[in-house]
Length: 586
Image (cartoon, rainbow, N blue to C red; front, side, top):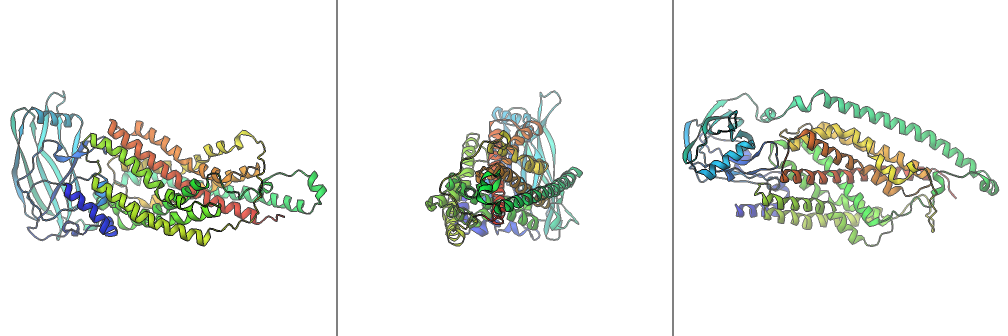
């Protein structure tokens, strides 16, 4: 097994693009001739309520069939990262070759093995198998009503549907309930029945989807509600800002016609007064530029992966969604370098190499750091979620040999093509004092309130995404996800523009970080919602599942916050540049 994992690492390095998106192997062709070998893969076993707490199938004292060799084996990088532990069942299955009930092995049930099975039954363990990439689930056993006697299902009754030379349907029926008694022998058996099916190969995964859940009226209503909120918010922002800005422009034009004495005696206030400081570099420009570059890259990855998922139905291939995301993230590294490098150059930054390194490794370091921490817990639990060392080497190699060079290219292009300051206003040498203002106009308050509306536009979709990832539903409505992404971006930009306008009108020119953080605060509300979902919508328990859930929810929320922050800043930056371009300033 160790050698096969090193092969995964080598394959990921030598044939990165091909190995990530699809692996060419016999099983992936999905075509069979009569009597050709069909492999039954045993994947994992674990408690029903803790989807991520999975172990190797043979970690329970199950026995394997007599067949020892198979003609092929395959594994992708995404499968390895997701803890897909494919082990050959040892069952001899051939295409269209029926098998009557046959004993394939026997279990010598001593006290230790009985205790292992009893523990699994008490914790509602069930296992997962694959035939031709089609998942099959079965329960280990069950207890009687009193919970005193425990029974093991010993007979796997497989019914496989075929259409031409392709497998289109697999069903498992567990029978042969045997009471667990120490120091006995339990015979494990199986049978295979083949039947013709009218299901098309392209539609064979439809049975695993749940249209009644994902296309429920609540889902449609939430999309419609968010869309109406966008129309209302855009209209409201346009009306308020255009009317207000028109009055501001009229007032400023009137002031320009006054002489110096009248202007000095006049009541000057508003966003025009900070024109000499509004384009001043933000505090900590190195970190700020790196966050903006990373956010732009996350947005690019999200958009591309959703489009690919809409076209390719990635849920039909194990680990393909994660593999595609890794590949797209690596390929879009120039986006990170371009936006981060150009912004850093415009703000007068000189340590561009350090900025490039921080921008390139900000997200990978956060993800890998969390994954490695959880990996130690998985190793302690001997869970299949433990990432093999070879896969770690492959991921680190991708970071250093793919992401970093592409980020360097993007940084150089950004600095040379759009890295020159071209502000419509000259920046004053001495910063203007920030006047006192009401408490609700302070940047900290604006930041806390800025994420409420963006979160309100996506929180229904968060429920469906959480349920698909943390439960047993396959998410397939990527058209909904694309609409929600567009709605989120529009709402975020509108909210940050309003927040920035109020801030500038209070003659506070610290709008860069305020616009970023007010949009990024959406992540705080998403993470708070994840607590509610964990305690009230799931039955998860245990250290492993809890650390896995809150660890990766922190990664997801932080990434979402960085993306929203970048989107909000980019939209607000265009707004600020526009309003100061249209005002005549001496």
